[in-house]
Length: 509
Image 1 (cartoon, rainbow, N blue to C red):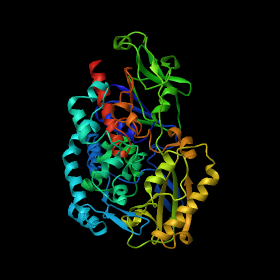
Image 2: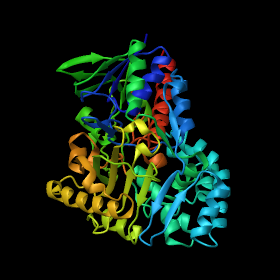
Image 3: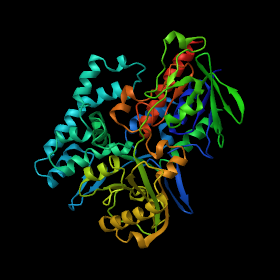
Image 4: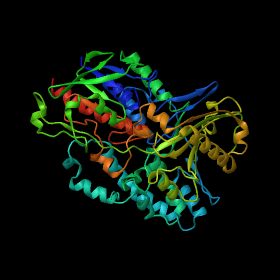
């Protein structure tokens, strides 16, 4: 039986373990924290419990399909469809609801923005043809060589998806209203990117919202690691928590195990599931040279047997945006509220340029609110609420977050009270903050909350791949790995890594 080690128990590592165990591989997973889950976890205080990281479930069929492929029946988790999908609150006083039905959404847009309903239908019609092609070409396969990515067919598809434009500009070809452009481009923030920096290929995100819905997991996204880890333990997989991997063993062009607690542990393959830039610190430093993109120099034959002569070029990476996260418990519920809400400033574009270009906290911040009791009454004690506020901020862990975070949280809660949650501050019974400094301490690269930033130079073939280096036996999964961030997409990346691993182990006997 093949033996595989997984370094890190985030969703990527857990998904890989699930798929590998289904293939009959003996898996040992090492997690430095006391619990598995990584970004997908809970914050808890007394009777209050709310997701710590991801809250929005997109692409539900991808999520459940990969779990089913790993032998986990779909009935093990209950997905709840949000209706409305979400609400957008603008400074103008308009509140736009995102709706699942195309005609209903077009009518809602037309009601607020006369003449724009048809633009939405054109967007959805165009993307309905492009999305399946983009999913197949860019989400469901990895790229070891640039020539595999830049094929004539892919180049035509990239042009049709407006990859040469930025997301905000691509959406602007359909809508005239700045508010609608914001509503159909802010989805890049889900993966830590600015709409004016993220490539136009990410129009697949706003399309997917309306095409497949926005969902939540009953009981919270934090239940997903619990469900997967329970299944893994029942299959005989080993999950070792509170244990940090100190280094990886590389011999003769292959990764042959790891070191933990000062002891070598040998495996047939290793999968790394942390923020990718940290992988360099686990590899022998003699492998590295200079700066630039992560790749090996030297011929393939030098690396396929004997001592490798080429060396890995050190990566230069850009983290995603940071977040101020506010977790709260309130002795109140709000009628007619929705699960997912966005509160936008006078100019989201200017707000995000302050954040991404000037590395400043805006005086008029944008933020997202997760209010699970709007759909799941059991998410909080009777008559009470748990709330989650996400405020995009610079990924600058060195800032004085001790004072900055409190002031920003006060401003956001006051604004939320005025615009959608009357009586909020008086009803609070619990409040906890999480900053980019906290994110960095927990292992998130550069204090960013979503892995590597989804800029052009870190997308597609330019992003670290599930088989990141031409070293046998070393693979990677996670938000920083192709195809990118978001729980179902991370799971898809783990699936790609497992496919590469199984092929290599089969080829090598």
